[in-house]
Amino acid sequence: RVMSQLTPRHAHHGRGDTSSGASGGGAAAAAISHWGTNPPPRRSSPRSSPRSSPRGGGGVGGGHHGAPFNARGRRPTSDKRSRSRLSLLAFAVLFWAFGPFAHKVIQGFNKVYMRAWFNPVERPYPCQPTSLAPKKLVDNKPLPSLLAADTTNLPGLRPKKFKVGLISLCDDGVESICAASTANKQAYADIHGYDLIVDEDIVDKSRPTSWSKLLAMRKYLPDYDFLLYVDIDTIIMSPERKLEDIVDYGYDQMLAADTNGVNCGVWMIRNTPWALWFIDEMWSQEQFIAPKSWNMLFKYEQRAFHYLYQSAIWRRVVQGEQYPKANSVRARTKVVNACVFNSQPSFFVKGDLLVHLAGLKGFVKCMWFRRYYREARENMRAMGPISADADLEGPSIWRCMTHRT
Image (cartoon, rainbow, N blue to C red):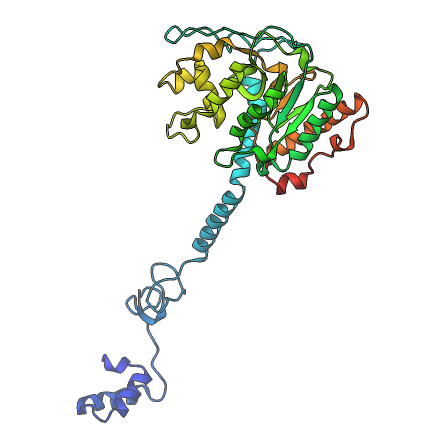
């Protein structure tokens, strides 16, 4: 009965197999006799169904109807799973390509707008050249645990001939804005008869570029009564303002303070023996070039300045050993309001001497520079004719995209 249901292929095989037994041949003959020349109908059962067999007949089991198995008997990845993996790969590529840019945009939004809304800096309106930093930011009281301040030979007399130098640094890390920023400062220096110093050869490659401001100040300060160091990401916005109106002749140096304390991105220093010593002392703080401490604040030479000054935020966060001569540094340093000469975009107001794009990065910084530079250029022109090398076009959008800032 079982053999009678064999297909013709099996029956033919049984009939043509000369090595089979007599009973096998008889069964094959009976099958032919029963079905004649027509093949028997094929019946499927759960065991022999190609849809349910996990390995047989090249079928696919488990509900994936009609999909073939590969040579190893494994089911290939479905289209849906392949699309998911491709989507994940595309997202990873986009994140790798645009993630840093998005981070800089968000960071810029925070520094320009969020600070202005939620952490504004107290300032006078209008800003006066002698405006002091807010009381909560002024940190110049003597520290009782340290040596008393040495205030001998404090400067006080106004020099007979006021000679001022404006100094800045450029390197390939700010190539998108370097030429325009230098032109902005050259125009300002020409208006008031100051000297502009941009010494690219003085940069010490063994340290981050910002440290080399100390080398430049140490080299050129003996030739001037005052030097005003300005970072290259500053734009002078009010050329009618004079540095002579800002100088306080009773101090060796002047800096402005923001919410993080003193900021030496803009730094006015007088030619005195103590000031020259202080620059050398600051340069010698090699432990802050590449510190390993997890709680290190700020970057580059800012660390050294806050350590020598022993600012409140430094003592609170970094702690550690205190600089024993900090009281002398504090007594000889005047801390002014940021609106005097170090306004950042979050609290810049028209009429401030300059705007400092501190904390902004890359393309975002370059675009903000473009915005302020256009206005500054018009302000310079309003003061009178300016030389061709001080009247350059600002960086293009393409330059901002393809050059470092």
